[in-house]
Amino acid sequence: MDRDESWLGSIKRGFSRCCPRCGSSGMFSGYLSVSAKCRRCGLDFETIRSDDIAPYFTVLIVGHLVVPVLLLLEQRSALPVDLMLAIFLPLTLALTLVLLPFVKGAVMGAIWMSKQPA
Image (tube, rainbow, N blue to C red; front, top):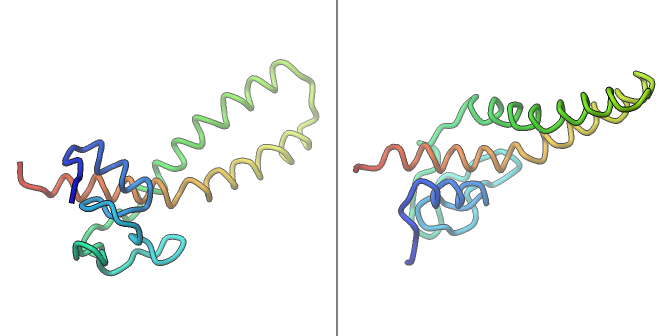
């Protein structure tokens, strides 16, 4: 079992929704539902609780992506507010929903790595 034991490797495996220890797929059983254990190495995923930090990081990332584009577009064009809302509200919602499970996996990878002995 070849694996990268670094923080970055663990976060990358988590971001790809794989086990942070062995890298096998199946950390999630649904959109955000975490499987009980890794099928390959037996890591207990239920003890790795990301709680509210994953949505916080997701909103932080999406905000830093959407707000500058919104402000730039608002300065350079005279689009009506209704059109701006029609564009940026669905865009913000879609980006948030797409990124959330990946950020949750990355956070779970970081939490798992932080519990490992040095």
